[in-house]
Amino acid sequence: MSVQRARTPWWFVLPALALYAFVVLVPSVKGAGLAFTDWDGLSPAKHFVGLGNFRQMWSDPAARGALRQTLIIAVAITVVQNALGLALAMGVHSLVKSRFVLRVLLFAPAVMTPVVTAALWKYMLAPDGAVNSLLDGVGLGSWQQNWLGQGNLALGSVIGVIVWQFAGYSMVIFLAGLQSIPAEILEAAAVDGASAWQRFRGIVLPLLAPATTINLMLSIIGGLKLFDQVWVMTAGGPGSSTETLSTLLYKNAFQFNEYGYSVAIAIVLTVFVAVISSGQYGLLRRQEKAAAR
Amino acid sequence: MNRYTARTLLREILMVAVTAVLAFPLYVLVNLSLRDPRDGSSVIMPTTSPTLRNYADAWRDAGLAGAIVNSVVVTALSVALIVVLAAMAAYPLARVTARWSRWLFLLVMLGLLLPFQLALLPLYQTIRDLHLLGTLWSLVLFYSGLQIPFATFLYVGFLRAIPRDYEEAALIDGAHPVQVFWRVLFPLLRPVTGTVIILNAIFVWNDFLTPFLYLSGSDQQTIPVAVFGFLGQYVSQWNLVFAGLVLAMLPILAVYFLMQRHIIKGFAGGLKG
Image 1 (tube, helix red, strand yellow):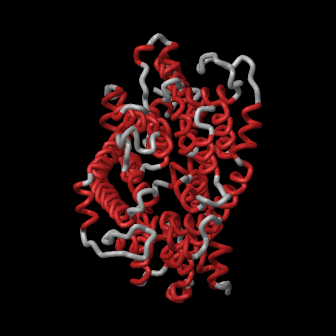
Image 2 (cartoon, each protein chain N blue to C red):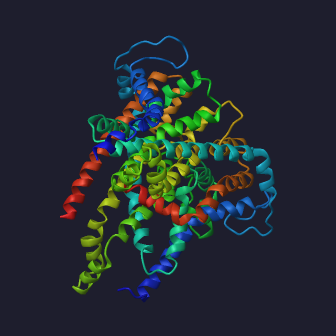
Image 3 (spheres, rainbow over the protein chains, first blue to last red):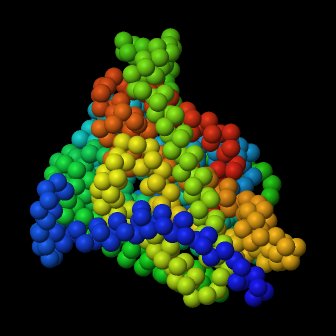
């Protein structure tokens, strides 16, 4: 045993470590440092401004708006995408003859390139697009909207598109969880007279806790970092109604030459992701343990 | 309760209907891509005289041929590097119980927490200073480094569950530890290698922001960047744009439908860690 332990090639870790340090660790530390400067990204001049960038964020309506939209998107996606994913999973879990075909079709959007699906939806939601044509075709012409052209509606549309693309992803993870629930337990409960809803609340949902944890973590982190779809569909507009921290960060770094400020935004985003995801993880794990007891 | 009852039939009909509604945008996509731009009929009706003209035009104008080759090269190289480096790193991290090994594992796991936005801008400068902007190497370097924590995490979890007996038997037979890893352990890691390949290939293939930044101003493109440029160029010519979108989606959808069982399992299983 001890001979083998000594002979495990410790240097196997070096190539991965070097690349990881070069791409992630060192730039992250540098990035954190730049957040306390006024650097514009181009000129050699760089001044230490302390917490100036963070104070600027606090009073900058654009940053406060982006933070608000980012949180709304993350929470809305987490709730709606997973509720729909769970419903789909329950629907195609068992017995239904076409279940294998339906699963493959329902998951397909999740592997599609976000830029491509966003472009497709940009058209679907245009004033003369397919959604409005469809509404007109079924006699709901009065429901037609400029889906991406009005503030709150645009935000809702963006959320809807993300849910459309990733509900199948949530479904697949819930399905993996459902498969681990022994059919005998559910049958016994049914024999004992538990209704379908009671079986769902009392047995299925608690036993799905690990799958729920993974799904909630993935969707909240994905929602907080959202960029591609927003950039293609609205670029943050109309006005700044769909601006997120990621799009604001991009604009400051590469369009407004506010490099130091953009890194400060990145740090705030980092803190939000770290705090929310670890807090959520702790909470969910406690519930998992309570459910297992 | 394992019988196909009337309620099951109802559920079947409902699920087919829901799937049809969710697939509606894809129907519109294909339908319009086959339509002559002068055809003014409703977008929801099937096209009466389909044409492939849009496809020919989109293929010519979007520069998709080069973009597909670039995407394949970047994805293949990145995924190969991730698999080899992460599997190697996982070996000592899973087997050595010394304190340095535990600390190093935590340091690598820190990468799961750090959003890449923090490193994005300083790394952009480093890549620029190394004159790698506009090259595919910049992307391969970026993806390999970025994805090492997650892949290492999966490999370490899997390796810890493999008993040491296999290695010990080979070592007693006089094999070199490096050989033991590649000949004995690495083949045993096949299921997790599959998951690592699937998750990373789809992530790298679909990523937009990184190539958008690192390749901008050069004549190199990946598929998402080519699509984005194409969109800006042909703003309202939707028939043409949609043909381009279908072409851009075909490679990944073809792979998905050919390997759907493995891919769905990869997504569902890998995330259980």
